[in-house]
Length: 258
Length: 360
Image 1: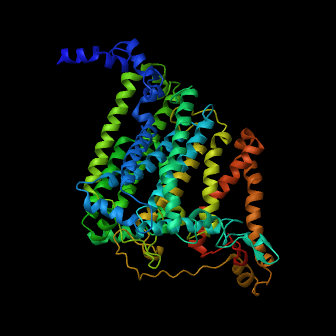
Image 2: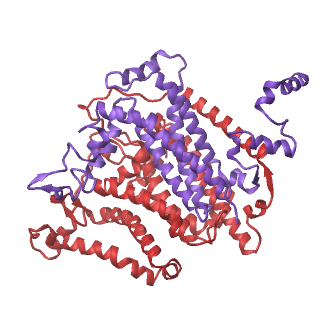
Image 3: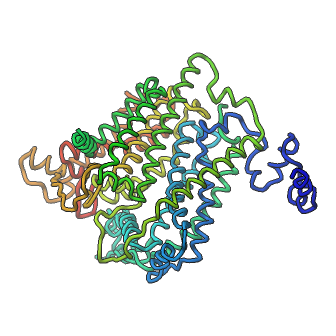
């Protein structure tokens, strides 16, 4: 067995991928991190205090892991899902009825809930260790935006099964937009935006209409939420995550006493 | 005996008492943190909660609400929040003792040493990933994702709830109009979170757990996050049923349960009850008492508090930072203030101008 591993590690194919030996020497451990596109998110060496689970709770890393889980399971779900008012519910229902031991939808949903929790706990930990303090102020802000995007990702995905739970949760959630000051037709100040007794802000053109593409949660809202859920928000989240991780490195790695 | 415990539990989680209890619990934990975060105390309370769960499991209504598939994550949230709050405070207590003795903090001791990312960090990540993959698989196989009847605009389910992470905001709809609960307060939360690093000028407590070196920051954040966000999410999930009426955890969700809601505007209190005259026609004059009261709250409180209670803080932060912080603080405080006034005086609005959709 040992001989076989040794042989595999000596082949040209293996050595073309991994340009270092087994990481048991300082040199090879350094190279293992530096020459790997994923691992080089990390520095070669880290503070001993910074990797203790009792310190970091591993919540940021867990959030990133759950994002990857969501991407993979979401991709698989997209194969079987058509975002139209007639077909959406049928497709989701068929996933349950026709796919033996199908758990992709379950994994996608539970991981999404878990991701919201892990993001909150990550923020909680970062606050309690004062890790937003200089020089990490900007990265805390990136984190806040990522937290909001996580909630929006979950919120837009909530509508897609197109069942009673989905539609009415989104109805309750988006009803708020009606009351946006000045921009919602039931919001304070909306009546001020009028000309000669003609209201410019009404149910057919306020913020809620813009969000839903209609006066109620219908076909247009489904398409909007689908596109945002599968393409828009994940792209923004991925971009901001790259910025977030890069700034963690640039701001001195996992926080620790100065 | 069993019925007595159930009745007591239902009585205790009624919104007013629930809020008082959670507030008192947080205050007690922060004040007596040294004793209350002792592992034995924490372990015993966890066992107590576990015992309550085992006891409550036999109840049909309790089981129905707790095992609802979409409610399982909120149980996870509840347990992890309890655990991590304890962990953080425990480490803060230990660190504060060390600082007092002039020793380095728990983190400070280890931060001098550096270890290789491979294998020390990579293995932690790998084990985390494997464990959570396993957890997700077991969870997904054992609990099916819910799917209800097809969407219909004609039939409104009762209760209609927002996704669980917004239930705190939905709970605030009881006390505030949508433009505050759904638009203004969420915006302030985001703005406030973003502003934290720029208004907190305290250089201490950077990179380690501590309470003593930043008591106000930690208490304020815990009040906002634990009391006004997480605990309202838990309340909205488990204690709010049809018609958004309150239901105890052992209570059947009866859609016909009616809670009389008679609440009165401040203007009625002022003109009708105090002065004994009908309310003036013009909205601005009618609502003048509320407008003056709120203006006074937001304009007068910052300088008053800056000269008395928060004198040191105001001097350290400078006028701009202090005023931004005070306004965020006053908005946060307005939420429990309004809740308490609703419970005690059935106050509906400070300012109620439905003509302009302007109700505070």
